[in-house]
Image (tube, rainbow, N blue to C red; front, side, top):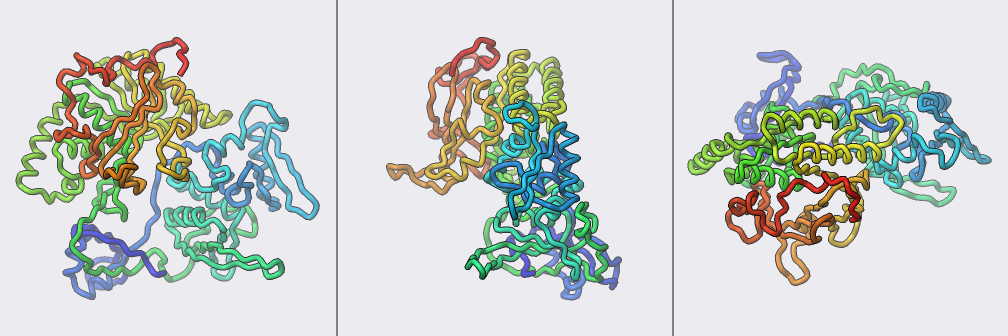
Length: 555
């Protein structure tokens, strides 16, 4: 294990575990210490305290397919359809029981000299009902095998089931070393499986190898993953694959660390769970979130319009910090580490006084369903007379009903219609953020988003009065336009659909340091004109969303 290099500042917190029963404290004790203090400690101290690896807990996720089935399909499934090619009795038995649970049939086809192929279907083409093919399509894994994010960050039991499916289909038990080996041609999928193992606290090694079949002159690069640790807890079903209990005296979860001076530079980090431990990468607020926060802050602070924000991705504390950063014009990194100049402390205090009176109401209930959201929105309308609802973001919501017999596209369609009804009922505009499909990233050219990129449901486009995309050429390393003008710090709001107005592109300035959008030529970070709500400008729509209209207007 060659280890990983990463750069931090002296305030970075190292979380270390005592590896020897020496001096004060017990072996296994955890110590959180800054890089500054660690470097000033003795060599013996540094030898006694090591880095360590832990399993990560995530909340249970609502997923459209059982994790074990998805693991089987990722390992032994056809990339183009839902069939699974496997001949292990335990796997075949599982597919039979899963089909019965769904009220469907398990079909088998076996060509001469071939392994059997199994499909779960309703037994007749064209018959409406639950479709594994449709569920796989909704997960965007057909012809694009990968582990969807909702499965990667699901509960421990869900991740164990997913890994069990991968091992039962594509894994091999190493009897001598008591480990598992998975070999794949897909590097990205192999790295995702490694992440899955790392998050469960296992030791996983990744290695590229050259595979050859001399008889046919075949040669290819494959990627081998070996997994060790408490792997006997993985609920594999194939009888020859359960692992033995781990009994090695070596603690695979403890590792040495080496801290070396690098150079003076700007470093970023973020904390999780409020415990001052940092992840290795900087967390940058998404462009959609930054834009809607700018809208919400302007509506609430400039015009006193109460705004409700339902955040399913970021916590209320994180959003509040972003709003304060925008208002104070101080970078979030500086606010987190407290390294502010005197004038910046004054700016921060002044911003806090202003923000404390702003009528913004943030609900960060994770995985909120449409019924809960509607009830909370009604209450906020009654108690605070909210004038705007923002949802971040649509695909993290659930329909609230039993979707076992439907699919995710139908569920998102139902959510979209319900939000349209909510806007009509409360007579307020609803802004719902939406994910784009992966097609944007793989498309060539400028990667400018378009309506077909909306993820999971065409009903989003159908129900909305306005569909707008935020596009930053700089994000895709496009630094100049066709005329040679700089695009650094430039963002575009692309109005791709406007039921009652023109389609156009509006250029804005994006200040990455404050995660803030502003008018392109306005040095005051885009403060809106006074009394805009009372005297609408021609280019600003302020009436309640026309999505409230029942009439069928073509678009």
